[in-house]
Every structure is written in C-alpha cells, then in structure tokens.
Length: 141
Image (tube, rainbow, N blue to C red; front, side):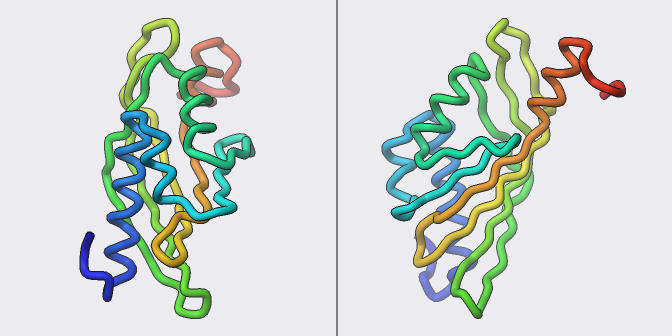
C-alpha cells in the first residue's frame, strides 16, 4: 500500500488492485476490498451486491473480457471523508461467438470510505456495440 496519509493515492491503488482481481476473475479476493452494503450499478441500471455477481454477469455477456487502463483519477470530499475514483480505458476480449473486440470504451466510478469500496458505477459501450452488431442501432458507430 501507499502512504496512508494520502487517502487519494491509497484509494487509486485499492481500485486498481480490485480491478485487476476482478479481471482474473477472482471475485473472492476482489470482495476483500468492498465494504458491507456494497452496491454495484452496471450500465442499464443493473444492480449487484458483490464482485461475484458482476463476474457471473460478465461470464454470460463475454467469452472473456479484460480492461486496458488509460487513467485513474481521484478526488476526496473533505465533508464526507469519501474518495471518488474514476478509472477509464478500453474493454477488450471476445463476444460469446468468438468475435474479438478491443475499443469498447468504459468508465468505472468508485466511492471509497475508510479504505473500502462502497459503490461502483460501471459504464461502457457494450450495449451500443451489440445493438450495432444486430443492425438495431439508430446510427452507425
């Protein structure tokens, strides 16, 4: 861990460790970084309460998927003591039919309190890409 006197740097490291564990996937190890009452909200409003829930969802949506980090930014809220961490990049992997992808944009927004993740919001282009692949998008990607 980094110097605990810097909660922003510590929160960024916790999030990146959590994301690496989630990509293995090792939801048990990832769960060590979440607080009781953890909430995860996926694109489309899907709600999960554990890393195992999102791993199971991803196992149905993708043959396999990983994240290529571009940036991890964070800011603290001195009034609440929370730290918000923003991790952006690209998803890459394969759809269930074996088609590869690598430019699926994402942003994950984490809220941490006392060194644990209390909430994650997950946003990515997967739904738009799937709509386009099935000729259901309103405009070309």
